[in-house]
Image (tube, rainbow, N blue to C red; front, side, top):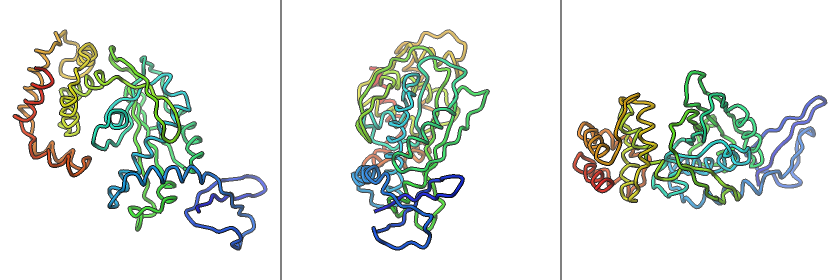
Length: 322
């Protein structure tokens, strides 16, 4: 079983993690190293969750472990009180709460109320401490810029990979998992929020955008983003399949706040939206868009990329906005 070692000296105590295995009674050369069985139950819990993925290759291992780590981060953020002021949203939110069948790299959030003074720093400090309960020695980096409404942070971790002895690490001992966290501190008005209970790694509750508001901001992104992101359009097709209707009040506020319609008074109804989506669809290189999303999909979902075309997505618009 993996153990934690603690280096003790006269003036400080520092904690490090090792992937070495040790059996009780095994001799040690340095009597300053004390071994304990700390966090073993947590590591076993993580391993059980990871094994559910049945990852068949190194790439699948890495993806599965990132998803497990995302859930642990969400739990730890709840412990910090983060969801008192923020709401979960975006692709990873859809995967965890609504079973969107694609991988998402980032954890995306919005503040419930605009706050120009929001900072990641305090939450990141608490987050790193809580992750140690799971035997994880993670590095957190605040990458926010003062002049940006989208505040970014990164969590880097190699201790979890080492503890599970995964194959994708072999030959690259310096490799770290990276999870990006982003939060909009000046979100447009009109989001609706819900609360959901989750139970891994323990029982907790997250505040999140409702699915209609999530769709509204997704449509804003695919209409206003200056480049094509295939993941946006994959998600759009998924929403159409679920018969989700966008929160038009939120979409109107988002369009007014940022993008080519910024500051313009629009009548954002289903007729306007349908025309705007069809115009956008007509100018997209669908082969390139499919390439962007391919690595985030399983084999079955990848087959559907062969259908991507103007005609295919025009049909999705008709389904969403009949």
